[in-house]
Image (tube, rainbow, N blue to C red; front, side, top):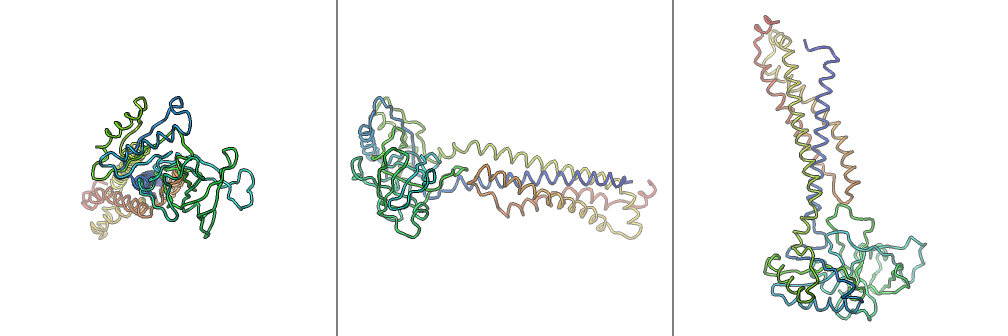
Length: 401
């Protein structure tokens, strides 16, 4: 009455396939959501609380040379620092939230010249004094930049902890000299400090992990990020005072994307959040289809096995025995489907790791949780048919046969 072996294999394959798809979608969505949440909430080497950022692009017509740009930076910092509620103000080429820095190659004084194209490279950020205080980045050794580091003074650099270890090993990097190789003639500068590593919230960390800082005054640029850390007041309350300061300096100079840093970060992850929500929706859809599928197939199979169960009752089987048979069948198919789904989930996680190298996409708790959830779904979906099978009246069922 339950059909041939071919029909049974088809039904079983259908259930296993549904659970496999549900497992892949569930683990993929959970891993991506967990990884994205960890990445967005991590603050490695910097802090965004009570920080306001904004972008300013200086037109070359009004600011044609380095002296004019440096003068603008100096006055801007003085006036921003004078705003009530401002704990620290700085200017930089880019914030640590995202990977926007220039990548430049360097030579190390006293070392053998590397082959062309194999020079060490670092992500470079031009910063003003008090940058590390503004972002809460720790200086591990040496000194920070100050007002004495001017365009005419000897060049100085601060490097990250990873860069210090990669270039100098256990040797103290303070006092060593570097020179950029891609700005024309080599201009040597001295390393005066080592800062802790920073990690952006971007899922793609970029090909270069070494980080180097130079004084903004020694490499002034028309594109600037102004950064203000507040104290005792909400960051949003300083937006208008900051605009007023910038308008007072240059009425024709707009400040773009002036907002609290946390709001900037939240806005930047909208596309990833959409992908996360889509994966979650498909995962829930797959779980729902698997639940309905296993319920429908098992219910149909149990209806066809009514005669068999009646004979089992007649031979002494209890209602618990029949219920156990049905539940075991459903859980067994769910386990097989979950096993195949785990393989598919591993493949999906590796694909996501390739697309988002900076995201952590390996959490054993998610794999275990998804498997237990699917088993629970199988038990629930099998319970109603099992309960109905356990209530069969063997005499009536055999007469119907």
